[in-house]
Image 1: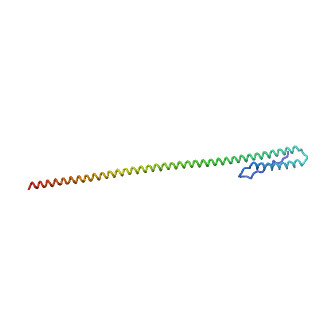
Image 2: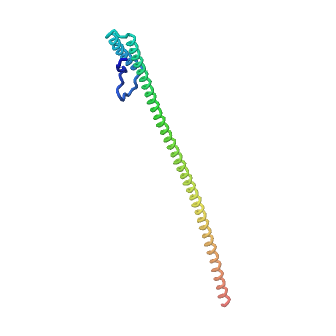
Image 3: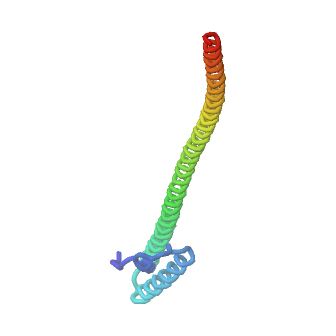
Length: 178
């Protein structure tokens, strides 16, 4: 057998942003196949050696090129699929993270709203109780003032009555002694 290197299709540049497409792989295969045919025809025309052996070598080369091209296409396709899956997984994680953040923010806002509502309810309850106590105190103060005036009037009347009795007793005693 001849020791000629196996023709491989030209590789894409390293770190290519896009995977090799099927059309590009087919083009690379066609170029490699044409080069293989040229070498095979030059090998066959060089000597009068065994033509079938050259045909076998050419066939093996073609099969190697086809296999390499198909393998490269499958590798690129798998790499592209893996990249798409990785991106999808990353986007799913971002979406889930955003959903969790939104849920937590909603929970915190609802908790704050509940606390504010409770505080407002208690403030109004305290205000109503303070107003009721102030009204009760005002009624008690008014009742006490009314009672004080009654007591003063009664005391004044009783003082007049005592004074009148004292004066009458005095006049009666002066009149009886005279």
